[in-house]
Structures are given as C-alpha cells and as structure tokens.
Length: 175
Image (tube, rainbow, N blue to C red; front, side, top):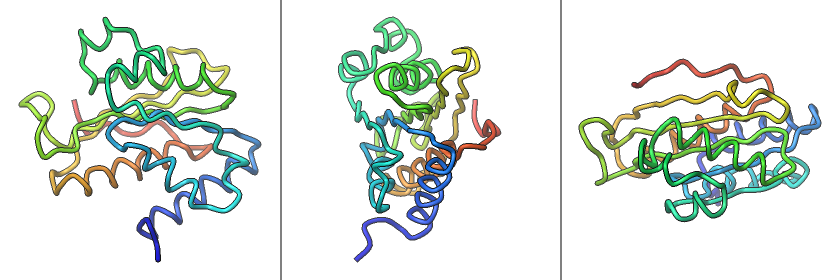
C-alpha cells in the first residue's frame, strides 16, 4: 500500500539521491502542507542521510516560536506571503544544520481565501546556507481550487522540486 502518489515518491527519491550525492542536508518549514513534504521524503529508505529537520508551523504562534518569524511580518503581510515564507525558510536554516531549507505556506481551502489571496494560493521559499539572505528564492503560485488535498499535493510537488540541488528559481505564476 502506497501512502503517497507514485509521482511524488519518485520525485522524493530523486531529491534524496541528488542531495546525498551532493553531500547536502535539508530542512523543511511547512504550514499548509502539514508535514507532507517531510512525510514523502521519509518514505524513501535512507532519507535520514539527507533530511535533517522538519518544522510543522501551522499556526502563527508556531511560526514565531519555532522559526523566529517576527510578529510584524505576520501582521503586515499575513501568514501567506512572500515575506513570511522567506522568514520561515531562513528560520529553518538558522535552527538546523541544513544546507538548504524550503518553506511552504498557503491556503488549501475550502475556506480561508480572499479576493487578494484565493484558495489555492501557496507561497514557497528556498534558502541556502552561505548565500546572501537577499538571494532567498520566493514565489507565489495559485493552484486551481480542486479541493484541499489536490492543493496540498501540488504544493508538495513544488517544494520537492525546489529541494533538487540544481533547481532554478521558479517562474512566478501569481502576484
């Protein structure tokens, strides 16, 4: 019995293999995905060589307490924003021994959306140790609202793609 779709476990296997070959340790900071990125990565045998830490920071309190996201960022930009994802990725990097950290925050639905941030809005950020914090990759995607699970699984796929060692900055699909 498979816990995740095979396309995600295949991508997770690639993330583990390529990061192992590159000698890279990764960390995750997850909100709307609730640990699914960490979950699919740890489905792969030997993932402990690569997955250093996973933070599930679903609430704003968790984002502040575990990742050091400042209250003014959350109040000014909201939990689903480039600024928050950026702070989450940097916080995960600072609170781990990882070489790369990816953060995911978004609105999976069915409620919680607005005109400015509809259901399906997900923000990603990637930070790499030793890079200038201004070089953090952050992007907003708006996935079709095909249900909570579909939005979350699409977000997992994007997060995994950002964890590939040679992954470029994503092309923005949103605001």
